[in-house]
Length: 317
Ligand code: CP
Image (cartoon, rainbow, N blue to C red; front, side, top):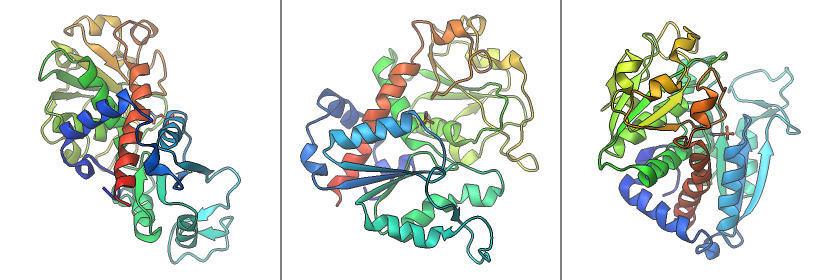
């Protein structure tokens, strides 16, 4: 595997999950793969889990790691070709990318949707420029339309906790004060369908996601009905996808907050969220603190999903 931006890059998902569970048993077994190899992690946006778990995964594999926070100490980058560069951005991404490629063997990129231009966001303009111009394998650490390392960790977590061959997995929209990208729900829906689960997505009308990611899932606008008999509840906020409301907040209705009353409708479901989470907006304190909450195991499995992805990239060098 050279690049990793989607579930399709892994090939057989069940095989990848099996590999992840093996790696988890002995996460230092592949140290030879990363010897004298350098990972460069580039962040256009903030991170806690992705930064720490990916760095840990790389060191498990024997790699050296360089981290660049583009907005803290680096030159501000122009991303548009053809711009007369007389603003506060002294360097162009088209020089910066191949320069970065000189100093490493593998590049991880975090570049969220900006909501300024839907076409730019959904063509994954930034990550694809890294793939095209860096000369190095590139993996997504959350891009505009997907967060595959998170979805991979979530699938590992579901496999570790499911008690049915085909559990009912519900992705529910929940309120948030800011407009958030669709990357996490897009990936979660796509990966959960690919894993063979029964996938139901519930959200207020107007929050329909891109069908490319939700194909195979059922849409249910009644949140309580969606929760009935669920084995896993995955909460997430996202801004509207469909035009003319792309990137807009259409609702902050706290009737959609996940609480214990709604969890009681499920089949004793586990609660999941990728974190960071706004308590008592997305989920109540008692639900996230309950013994059915998987938010910490999900975060722990980020190290494993990153390690499998890096292992496969290193094996291809
Ligand atoms: N879930 C996740 O990607 O967390 P960070 O934004 O903190 O990396």
